[in-house]
Amino acid sequence: MLRQSKIIFGTGRKIASHHGELTPRVLRKNTARPSCHCLSSVAFQEDSIPPQPLIKKMRRKEAKELNGSQSVQHSLFDPELRPEIKPNMDIPSFASPSMLTYTGNKNYPITTKLKIIKPGEDAPEGGCWPVFRLMDGNGTFRNGLNDGFEFHSSHSGESHGSSFNSSTMEKIPDSEEHSLPHLRESLKKMYPLHMNELDQNALLVPGKYAYEDTKSDNTLLRCYTQMVRLREMDNILQNAQRQGRISFYMTCRGEEAIHFGAASALELEDTVFAQYREAGLLMWRGFTLQQFADQCFSNESDLGKGRQMPVHYGSKALNYQTISSPLGTQIPQAAGAAYRLKLEGKKAVAVCFFGDGCASTTDFHSGLNFAATLKAPVIFFCRNNGYAISTSVAEQYSGDGIVSRAPGYGMAAIRVDGTDVFAVSAAVREARKYAIEHSAPVLIEAMSYRLGHHSTSDDSLRYRSAKEVQRFTDESDPLSRFQQFLQRHTDISDNELNKIEETEKSGVIDAMRKAEKKSPPSMDALFTDVYHNLPPSLLEQQAQLKAHLEKYPEHY
Image (cartoon, rainbow, N blue to C red; front, side):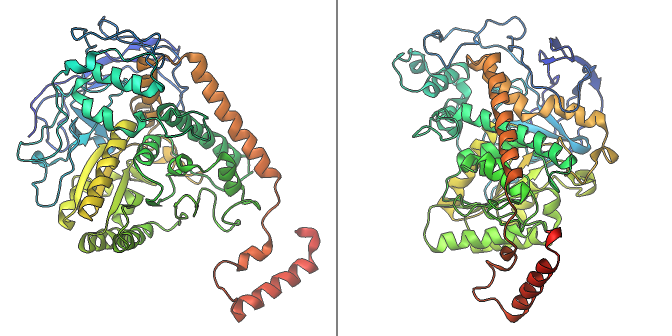
């Protein structure tokens, strides 16, 4: 059911100005009616946002408590510094938004309840599927009071509960081995509404062993580190393309929470069919910076032997299918792979990522229909970032996005905030669980915004304004939101944040320089890995190439 509530977006929220200080947002009334008529109240938007560069620098000021509330900003990673939270301690108030506005001024109601709509259940009332969100833009978890959507009681599903559990108030022994359990228990006291989710969320569970790249079992800090790593890799390799050092590149700015949230909830046995903007999933599974750089420079160490465009990654060892440029081809392939997993009795899923534009292809219909009728355990994950290259979602469809198509296929579905790494992790975890238990597909639509150009062949300012990009950069940058969460709830310092950024930047530059010095793949690689025995046509072409190289050696 739709909750009739009036809400001022961003009340009490503070942002970094162009001088680096935290200043309150100025609000103005916006009388525009929500595009999907889900909320009868008046919506509000922020105004007078201080100017910042399009690729703004990450905030380095310590986050302050809002509205003069009693501080609960503890050093949670250090058990020596973490004070005991008492039951009567105030939790800082924050006016969470009831609605989220995306590309084309489409407004969607928010819910803090994780609910997968199953086949046979009624679609959400009001004409709009709600957006599942846990963490607001200021890095705090929602209290659920300002949700713009409430599921009707007839919708069964796991409840997250809202009562305070006094048993969680006991102080955790300082001898606890891991820091994440301390953080998780403290968060449960601060956000009792989300106790169940905080216990399950993969980002708050330490690794069984120290991760190879961070030398630590802290999953949360590894997630942040890799988000920074991906952002730095995007910045540097995009610049390398502009300098003519590589031929092509595509950035992931604005969609990193989708990558790492999803990756944290999947297992290595789950086969990934990506599009071309999901490098973070591969990074999480262990693909190194050197491997990324080698692929983009198409050198002798490139696993694809130089036969693919840059950013068309693949790894058999990491169960990540090689990227294909034509849109949509991975969707029916994922349905087939999932069907095989079902036939073999494996407790695993196929996961297929694609953009909103890809949902307009015939392969989208074929793949989803096959998966639904064959009851294949596959997660179809749509990254709705607002644009199919230059085509806005306002020109792509007139209905309620992509997720609303699921009931027509007899498929379970959920819509999630793609800039909230915790919500994405939770949604994928439950979708995977459902797909395996029911041997059935699930459609996820993650609402996000592409902060960068489509690719290095694109100039997005020809079809969208710099003001629009700046607004979403200020309000929807998943890396900035995650950083604010860490600053509010852990003892991480500005020096540590700076060190992570500088370390990752240096790592990318080092990998790029090494990749640049490596030799190109052998020309013989052009003819291998397709046929066991080369057919006469390819043998002839191979002989012609060899003769050409021998005739003009000075050019190669």
